[in-house]
Image (cartoon, rainbow, N blue to C red; front, side, top):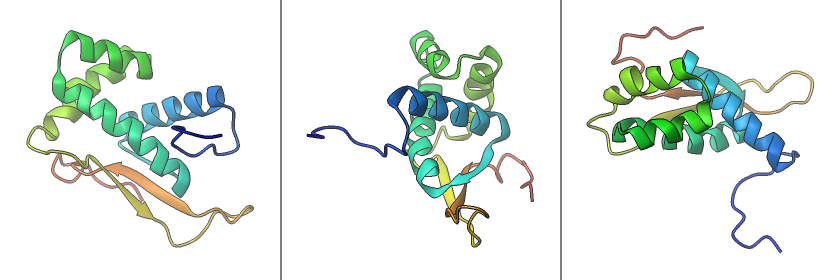
Length: 128
């Protein structure tokens, strides 16, 4: 039985899913926008929102929890110094998922872009 087992399996083992979510969260923090499938975007949103929550806390414990996921000191610094202050007055909804019109060639998977909502306010130009 699958009691209390939320989330999509995405055809992977839990170790593979965990590594994939970490990699996608790293890429999202580094580039502030990534292109992936809709299902993966919905799942990585949970990780990204939690990381921004750690950034808003701005304590040593929160930095260590973020480092546990990101495993990169420069990304943790960017998260706490650049990204989290943008959301200081926001109660939630730090990411947005935009569905793309055309599916992926090859397997016809629906694609989406996941990005931070405060991109335009920070003066970051959108990549085409």
